[in-house]
Image (cartoon, rainbow, N blue to C red; front, side, top):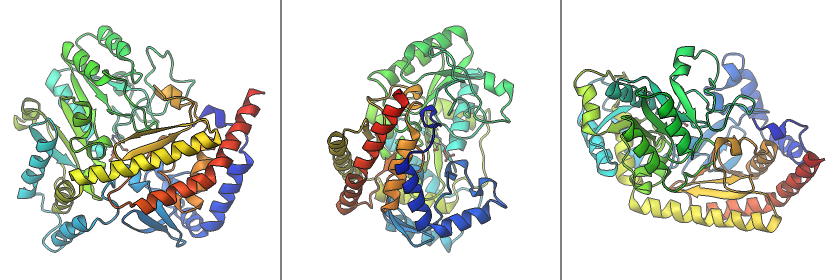
Length: 464
Ligand SMILES: Cc1ncc(COP(=O)(O)O)c(C=O)c1O
């Protein structure tokens, strides 16, 4: 992904990959077999990486085992969808009860309203509809915004991720030679199969650039339905908004008759009880939730004020789905909201995150690594960049081989520090303990000097 890593792999990374291959022969074999029937051998492209991904056997609390029997403290947690940790007892109990009384009916039941009440008590919204994935809920949010405004275009931030539907799969990971003018970025399709018409309706600004958003409204007067944004960009490590950014987006949108959609798929459960809305004190027009609200089951929701959701009530916007509100997912969601995402849980993950971030910062300082720590709520990321990134384009210059060195070295020592890919971040779960954080820091202290040394060597070589 990153241009600076296109040269040969450095020795330290090579050795860690060799060690990974030695420890995980069953994963290699399983992956090889799977590629015959499953493209890339995985069910989501994000799960594929070289030389092959780990195949998992089981997980409990904050730990998992791969199929070779190696144990890892898991800070990946299914790409941040498990602030509950694996098999949280309250979630498993609630779900187990449903397994004997019917798992799908396609008919209403009273857990739906109970969960809608939970969401409305935490987020500044009046009504909720449920679905099964983040992709679905951002797709419905965009459709609602289009219906509410009678307009087709949306503004999306370069490098932002909102799932896999066509309108959103634009400028997710454009290459440096594709991005174009920083003040007016190109709309770059995230793969083939997206129609030119769809592409024309997703217009792009860089994150943290309010002026660019204003220019887009001026360029397309009366044509933009909504701005969709991750309140904290968590598909480029962690990219924080500058002070006033969200308020600025909200004001520009409303001044121009458009809506603001907060994609809280990652932030909704993990940043605070009321997600980014509470954390930043913002009342967006539509909120999208998924991942950690399900406690380990497929659950997503989109929510808004009554007037917007009434587009569904009035049969102007259609929303449906066979699997929506299946009793298993709803039981998991209710248990998660009531028994996992408690004020105490936020204190717990925030305290552990602080300890982990401070421990990392000490090592960065001690080893002279060119990096900084970014964190928010239950999430943190080691960012191999000299100063806090402001945009996707900053992130794009990160040396991915140095990041890979870090990831393989940590993983080889029993700490999966985050999902594979340097655009992700770690998640602390309610199941993690002080001892897990200490072990994570011990392993980082062992790994950091070699990573820092490799980084110095590579930057000297690049300067030659
Ligand atoms: C911010 C954001 N929005 C939407 C999605 C899509 O969610 P899903 O994978 O459940 O479709 C993701 C997934 O990572 C995400 O991070």
